Amino acid sequence: MKKFLSLLVMSSLLLSACGGSEEPAGTEGEEPTAEQSEAGGLEDLFVTVATGGTSGVYYPIGGAIANILETELGVDSSVQATGASVENINLLNTERAELAITMADAVLQAYEGNGAFEGEEPIESLRGLMAMYPNFVQVVTTEDSGIESIADLAGKSVGVGAANSGVELNARMVLEAYGLSYDDIEEDYLSYSEAIDQIKNGMIDAAFVTSGVPNATVIDLDTTHSAKVLPIEGEALDYLIDTYPFFTSEVIPADVYGNEEEIQTAAITNLLLISNDLSEDAAYEITKTLFENLEAIQGSHNAAQDISLETVDVGMPVPFHPGAERYLKEVGALE
Image (tube, rainbow, N blue to C red):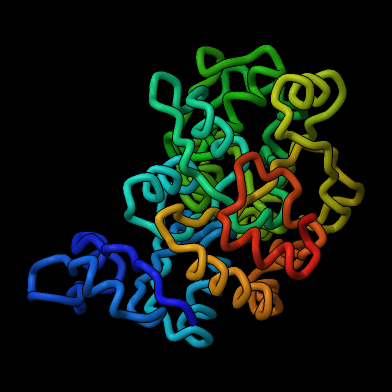
């Protein structure tokens, strides 16, 4: 295998991700030199996989990815719980993560320097490894809340996700499609689990849960309070798709949350990004290994079962890493 330049791992990330038990190669307390890094092989690389909150879908999928890299490639790897998309993009951009699961809307905004990244330099170094699976926008409340549509959220307390997360970006856009904004609701910046707990306790009325389906926290709510997922449909859905092309029309299947019928909603593709600082050979080996062990990723969560080579480029708004692209072309997934 060709030698490649491994990433320098910041000691602060090591402390948070693996208990601070390892020091980078080289003189104790110092970062390794380029010569020392080049002398190493794949086993010298440390890969942090940035995911989302521990109650979401990203975290178990990221854990499966980290485990594959460790067991199949011998690469030291850690799964990192984060605030999800926006934070993960920034972690990649500041060399504090090597892989990151994100939503396509946040990635496109970062790449172009607009939306949540308005006023910042476009992050043109973002590179894709694969498109993964659709994230369903799930606006969750309870059957006894009296809330029948997203328009009914006016004047209500609503969990909108962690601040600057992909969920929160979606919340703003969906409200906009219904002629609403944060001026019309009482927004609470809460994780999935926090939001569901607050609904149970009567502290908030509804919550945005943008994830794969089923989401464990929504299932949890349904066991005690008869969860209801509000549809996104009609003119509002058309507005989202026309205004923000990363949205697609999807349905939540019947019986996912005890719902008797399908629920129309909007969806956004989840992506796995890889650091542009990794060499082509490193990215190639990582991509090859993940797809050769795809069943392990698919088994980490029901949502991950949609990951396949056939949809690897669907919704990918940034270029593929050259190493990922080389593998995907070899297997015919890209032209």
